[in-house]
Length: 314
Image: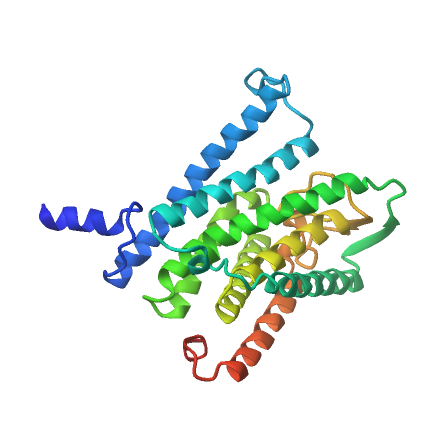
């Protein structure tokens, strides 16, 4: 019984114990991920209901805003969820913000945003050249206000996902386990969180989507480890989603809801080049772009960090 109690205490999300076998620490990291994720989502749902009620709508009776407004409420509600994650880190892990990757080097956020811009533009242009995406021009009426509001929403959405995966999980594991394990565990959790968006996708499309999710997760992990900061990964994540959804107007991770965008683009057919129902994030072309980016990053990191733990583990 005492051993069982010790085991429960070790893997409990309510303490900052890390001196335990690697497998137990991995289990603990997974428990923490879902504990914080589901807890913050529950609070986020409450926030969305509260906004409806304050605005004179009762969602329990089917009185809800239109899809675009709900999307904004959801994304800006992520700011509250971010606060929950940071409070958990401070109160239960007893760590500083810099220990989760939110140090003073905020400038790397823009480096990540530039990289994200290059990668998403290269992916879309390459798929355009295959003929699997059609460019139909620029929309005659562009809701600039909504697009700017969506940019703000994606700032919170990207930061939340990075905080959960590259923040909590990676930083809990990276100093007590080999780096590939820390990267692998947070990548698996990142993939699992997106599986529900693959409904209706063919097995081939789903496989490519999973591969691309792993690749983008590995890339964000490399950036986080290299810069010893979460900011670059947050910048990449935010700008990738924003440009794909609100600049190019393409499907984002299975979300094909029509919203405000600058360019009018559409898929031509359903195939592994355009990612079918999941969008270009399930495209083999995007996979090639991401693999190339990871290869370049690994080469640069080996040159800059010859004696580092990152290099020896990759």
